[in-house]
Length: 219
Image 1 (cartoon, rainbow, N blue to C red):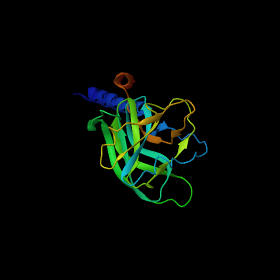
Image 2: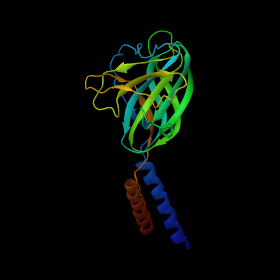
Image 3: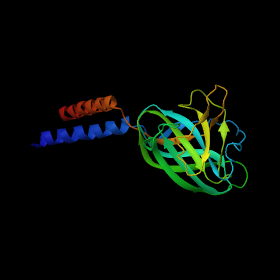
């Protein structure tokens, strides 16, 4: 390969790399139900079951483009407990364990007074465009109370839900009661990550990179 061809290939590759960097959305908010309204009463009734039972609180959400999820933040109150954070593509009777896409236990420290924003590391979870459920659980009856806010527009699949079941049972296959009305509050949820270009968008960027490389060679 002579110098002219080599420089052309390098220029094209550089242009494609720049196009990819420009086309891939910068890290930012992918899901946001923290709309800035005042805290609603905490969900104390849902998160104070008998000690032999466990409650899963669920907020449905939708992502419009394939994305890498880095962190999730929620508002809530805790007296200090281990809290299970999970993301699933489906919940309810008949759901299989394969629907659970992320599940990890985090230790949450006690609040002083009021409600705090808690941020959890999702470890760069890759999800395609679609509908999902964000789940919060604790076997401690006072483990965690997740705050609600007034909804703003459409939130996603299932909206806000809850289920109570025996500790040790699969949380994803339980019956869930969902609040989906236009005036129903939703749980606070903010997910940060990076949107991934679609195949069509990637093809466009590759073409743009090739054109940029050709123009640079001619110049």
